View (cartoon, rainbow, N blue to C red):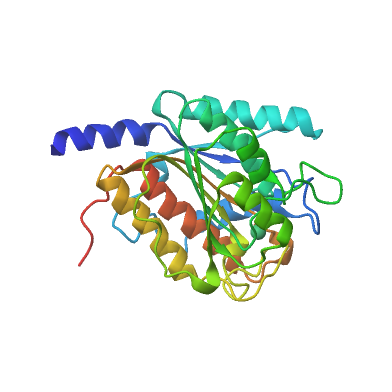
Length: 291
Ligand SMILES: [Mn+2]
């Protein structure tokens, strides 16, 4: 059993890739998230923290591959295609993807690439906003729209949203249209649904967190999650993965805007989330916890 698990772990760890997606052309309010991959890497490797997760998984850079940043053409359609191609290539044959950077629009092509390799995806989505607009300011590629596109295209079977605190009547109609499971923050109990199953894609919009914890985002939305609550959710996913209930196949961290950060506070949260997500992606089960 142990040998089996270890060999499963090692094969996943050899193909767990970090990818920077420096694209923020479809932000509706402020630009900046294109600069996030550089800032998160700088802090991740900056020497102020080690390469271990809270659950005791070592995520030293030798255990995963940093593919650097995607070179993107700029125009939207070829950019979407290039992101989707990269995502599909990385997640083929059991490879796992952690993407950093960009505004939330990039999640659409990232999920498209993962869905090419995994049927029946569940998306676990942390955000202040549902991002379900049919269009915003005439832009169907807006960072406020990716989950409308994903659900229209049938790229995921299930969309679970945590942290929401900006619902509108239009987006509530979209929730009902697409059967989205929304856990509004005002009534959330801190738990992910207990019946998650199959391949899981995790997407973290940094504005799910309260601006007190993550000021470096374009849309400050007070009354948000604590960093502790978010990390605890990733640990819940690790527990479910260890029990073979789910397989976390890919994740992204979006909407970090370094232009608004203060003393690297948000970049450091991003680096911590990178570590904790790598811990879930690299190992199907967490190592023994320190006690
Ligand atoms: Mn958001």
